[in-house]
Length: 443
Image (cartoon, rainbow, N blue to C red):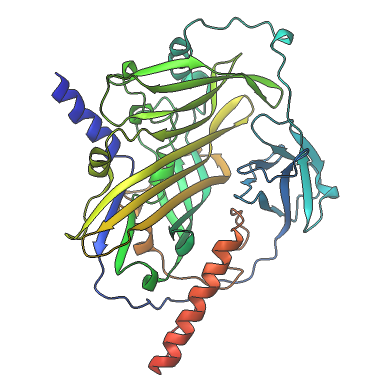
């Protein structure tokens, strides 16, 4: 019985994230092509930073949304954001929210094109103000929340536009970046039918000279972030077979948009040896809605964890995951909630048999829904037009283009380190062109 259960566990987790470590054929830098995109002037853009009102520290992954619309974006790891709004919308309020902080509303007319500083204050939770019966058993609350997904989450087919970014770092230096705009054909949360993805636009830039002649490829692309949607895909963490392997306990409560939120800690029981997950669930106390989740893989055995993620590798290397972290945030519109943002962080250590020092690579992926509308016709792309969960985005993307590449699409503002990496890779491509005497398109 135990053997059967372990096999199920492995099958479940390998369906989430797959990593390929392939021995490269050479160490040269690939030339990239141009995208020919016309400049779009049908939108206004607003740049700014979201910070803690007391410490002035940046608030990472804050949600910026134009009230009454489906237009939104997310602040980056430096707290910076870029929001693009069609020019035909000239009034309304922009909502800036962050877990555990009071939401701030700013009139669109008061926003500047650049250097908007938004300070949020911590929201103090007073349980005595709310008359809510707390379930004695934290696990019961989680089960009730999962059971109410049809009542609390989108029950109509929805067509979403999302921005996806995938980066690879060697130690602390960026060596590869891929970005894409994708269409998500989101099926109702009560449907067993999986969501479908279409690749609309994509670009990449990679400095292969920094990859130890290895080509690191994250299989699954945008699916890796989409599958963190626990309410749509609970089987990846809280399957019927595995939910009894976890212990659930209450943590300190907090508030989101003035709503009381129970924080539930979960971790695998001590006698379970398979690498499962541990983390926190943020559940709306009144309506039993999962609003956010932060969790990581409990690496009980680096060998077992490696079997879950590494598909191919050089013979003279041992590859182990050292950190697997995940986050998913949900958003609300007209009383219904939906997947809004998620990120995944994977860190791997490579021990070489013939080298004194090891290599450490960090692979991160994030996806933010920036717009959506009801899929009135229930259209679902044909198999040939859909991305497959085995996609490797860097193989599909072409190259970096001019600054107006993304047009009117809301994207996650890049970090300074990413921007610097792109400029550095572009300079190396120029040198490669000059040294070879050949014409090499520069992205």
